[in-house]
Length: 329
Image 1 (cartoon, rainbow, N blue to C red):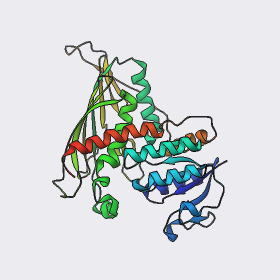
Image 2 (cartoon, rainbow, N blue to C red):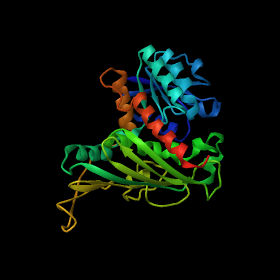
Image 3 (cartoon, rainbow, N blue to C red):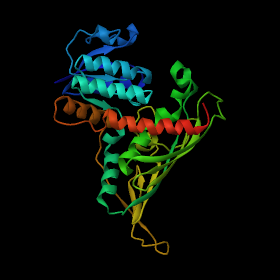
Image 4 (tube, one colour):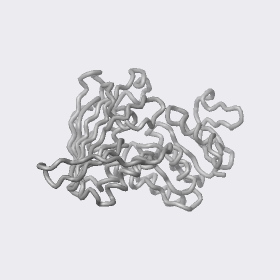
């Protein structure tokens, strides 16, 4: 049994808690939250802070605001706990570096919650591209177009730049694109806040160039109720209705593939020939559960983190560059 602490009981924290408690190989060792009501549990001890924890644990899941990730990870490392920290890994590159240094000094591992890499359909997409059957990827087009309710921004830290869809949502997509295409070499971003007029980007676009030669375009907004976005297309989030619509298309030298449908287009040598569609299949699986199972393997020393803090730092660096070039602060 792997004993896990949970810090933070917001939207993602409650999902982690439910999955930990339902898993036969995981034990919820304690809940850390400054709010007594939110940490209350009939059988699991609650603590106001990480310093108050007085129970044995193998690891900790940090589902707290971004600005707390560095100090909590450093404190956990000093306690000898392995860490699963939600994305973004940190609020700044300097804090990400401090987390990496603390974990290395303590001999513990940090897994970052870019859980889409654990999604079966994402894994299948990566496998199809890696097989070479579609040739060399050359271009990609991605959409994340959702409408968040106004009360989502009632939380203080979401009112500014940290609540924008760039850092909160596109960071998942950038991590996935990095997994598929390699490291990002160039970034261009544009943004607008024309709907809510908030002190943060609400919609915009970005163009990323990768060291593999792929160029990807991204369109994003948190002000429009469309069916196009990862969560809607895959049904991954219990809070977002499942539309089954594709939000990512990847063009290669011998064909193309759409996601999440995994519809493959191939058979045409050039534009005078008609490409034919075929369908790839992928198994079922809940990515947050698969990520927790992977975390248990990391804690046991049987696996290395799929997304470690160093990799997540590179994703954060791209996100910060998108923010810097977006033109809305």
